[in-house]
Length: 409
Image (cartoon, rainbow, N blue to C red):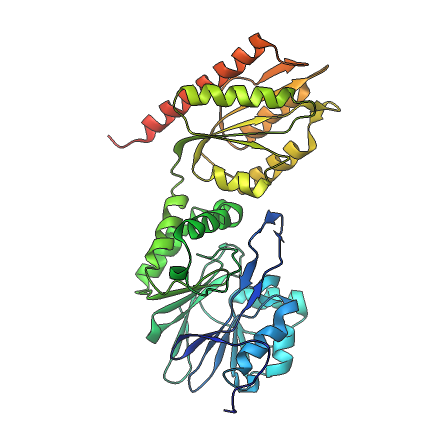
């Protein structure tokens, strides 16, 4: 091994034999439709043993940063193996550049990963590892665990047996750029929000698979001392905390909480939203009112992760749903939230078709609808606002009934 490089970036020591060599993306603000106001990290890890392994790479523009961090520890050409846990571009985009610079003996991925890397980059010769298979590094052992559909078919995790360190890929991560590499260095409320946002916007459709993964880890006898995901901080202390969060979210547990989301053209639908929220509050239901001009769809999804009720308002535009509301409903339907009480409302000038269309979208999400939808022509008067407050109270009562039904005897 040569002397340490004095390049732009330094590796961070995780254990005596493991280094973080990833990249911090302070500027990313969108991750396939989900807003990332705090940026992200693309985590890659260097494992030193008789055979040196690189676990994952980074997004393509950051490949030189990864190589610089590796060079602060060893000559990159001393890397023998590259492990690709997931072929999505935020992890594999830098792989071709890294392979060209490192010239490893072998690149390993899941069987589905081999196919995906070939389709993405035309890579040939990538070797498939078996679910439950191992790879000896000489003094250190890597074990592989397929995590299919968390959140791609090719996804897998890699376990460093002797260190009890799980490189969990997209499971248990979050989009959070930080100069701190460890979760215990960051305020817990921030970790909880960003982990919830990541789960709500990426992993929610696959919630049934999360308990299966945790059980699979236990059945394999995998003890996790350190949890090293592909985004966000490393959990070197109490990794069970984030695992517990995931298990709670996967359970579909819903609080007595409502989210009222809407857009408006001339404030009529906004007035209805505020009145509905007042009706909910009268019944003691904590309520989050989210006008779409000020609330990103990914934040709505995050608030909805533990909410029991979703009330959606839209004015009618060109005989249909207002565009921002239609965008939200399309996005939420893809995330497949379940167990919601829901209602639709909105103002209109002539036909008022939007409210029925919103209700149909909510029904398609398998929500339990309260009424057929409340629509008001033009500007709501006091009578109409009373109807809105009544709708809020009705949703609250249905929410309480649903919560009581779920409560253990």
